[in-house]
Image (tube, rainbow over all chains, first blue to last red; front, side, top):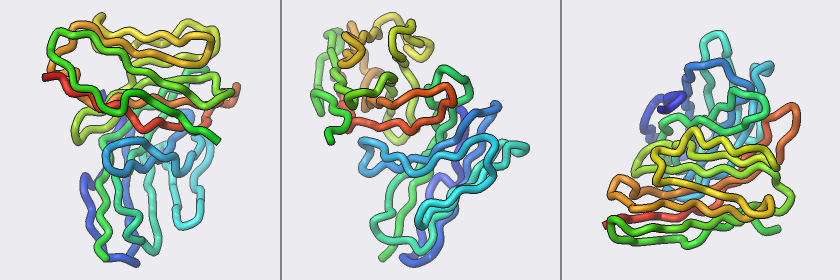
Length: 112
Length: 116
């Protein structure tokens, strides 16, 4: 079963606007990662945040983690048409076994 | 450098046939994972190999599914007596591993399996 859920399931915004996606999970975690998927095929890693971190930045991406609420958010600033994709959060919760449990994904569409 | 490769990219098979899916991980990555993604869904963990340790098979949906990893490198996922519900994209990933954990996983392009 899925560990987490992304919210919203789908999001459409104008190019240049900011996009925020949320992820909730169920069990304690070691790390949380965000991935992007284009065209239903391979995933690309975006950012990893550890359980003892609260915020992380990478270029136009900002990720927050609230372990007390078991939630994370991904903010994409100044969106571009190329950001159109599905975004998944994934958690690993067992040291020595780093299999990821994925959320259900947010489908982001950037309107030019 | 070369990323994770998978073959075939697409496979159409008749119900009841066996299929083999192949994954070539990034050289030097000791961890290898198989996931499955049904249409419009998130990824579902299948199996995890790490070095010489016994694989974590907890995600395999039935005993028709098996996987092996030869020489700590190439992996093959085998589905016996395929069923229509096996239709999905099968994704392989590899990563480094450390005692701290938390390395990103590099995904292959996937194999789209269609069972008719």
